[in-house]
Image (tube, rainbow, N blue to C red; front, side):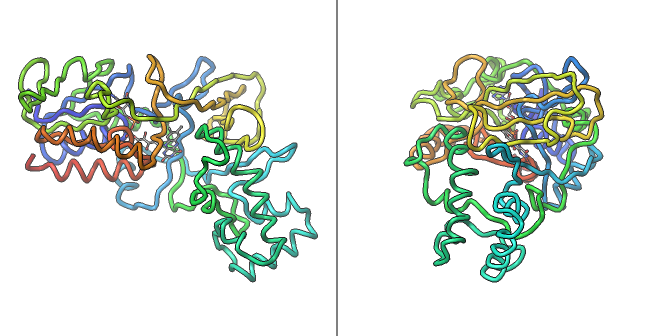
Length: 384
Ligand SMILES: Cc1cc2nc3c(=O)[nH]c(=O)nc-3n(C[C@H](O)[C@H](O)[C@H](O)COP(=O)(O)OP(=O)(O)OC[C@H]3O[C@@H](n4cnc5c(N)ncnc54)[C@H](O)[C@@H]3O)c2cc1C
């Protein structure tokens, strides 16, 4: 009945399904285990009419003209330059650490002298890893690196990844940047912002095609079998020989037989407040205190004007696979990557079976990169 099956309706599955239907005239069945489409990008109005991102704040940003043009067919944009501040003591300081941060931390006079040193050593506009600052002879420049490490990087990373300081990879630490400019924007991309009406309407439009059928609330594992004895995919008990694009966790396809792939998960605690403003910023990172990593205040992300305000606190924890938990961040290291490869190898016996997405590929992707990869994969399947 169908030419292709796509499992998952996040940006990977939705973009791939659209290309298969629109460019290759294929009939596509999209299976989504959640009750809604959109995957991690899903947004909705809460009980107070505030547009929230149920799975954490998602800011679209890209330099990729093609992806931007493709997505712009399905949405207009609310353009804004995302800024993040970190709460350190009583101060809210811009991150990544930049010349504005320098002024707040060191005061005008000392900052002016340090700014000159940074500019003459690295050049205006440079993005300098703290490892490079540490390599300088000048103790004042080294002290900036230490400040960033202690107050912005260390505890935040420990919370986010559940690591002890000695487990934190020095190669990663060294890459934390200091930006020699007064630009507070978090991302440097040409296009930054939000789908004007929200992500969910954008996904509805992507999937709105006569050759696409979406079945939400259906776990693919209940209707699709990968028969290893036959080397075949069965859909509702019958052999399916068309393309299958799978965007879920690859270990779950095989009953986690080699052990679960490790992930970090997140608990999101939403709170609505009957005040117009809570923190005056879209995102405040808690880099030295608290158990949560950050608070997002949605009205500052979406530009929505509401009387009250809704915030969300994010608490990271180790994913166990228990009912209701969602795997968010793959913990990529040589051991886990090897485990992933063992699972991925099991899929090779099934022809026309493709792993795509942050879960199926056990990788972190931003939305734009994911959309680009999905479009390219679907286009490559013209003869699948
Ligand atoms: C907290 C957080 C914040 C982020 N913020 C940003 C940001 O600001 N900007 C940015 O560009 N990117 C951001 N990202 C990354 C972004 O979420 C990913 O790029 C994007 O979600 C990847 O899309 P995907 O389709 O691969 O995965 P997902 O969005 O997770 O979609 C996978 C879908 O597959 C479904 N599924 C899984 N298994 C099955 C099954 N067995 N049967 C049926 N359906 C199944 C899932 O329910 C899900 O809907 C963020 C990620 C996280 C975790």
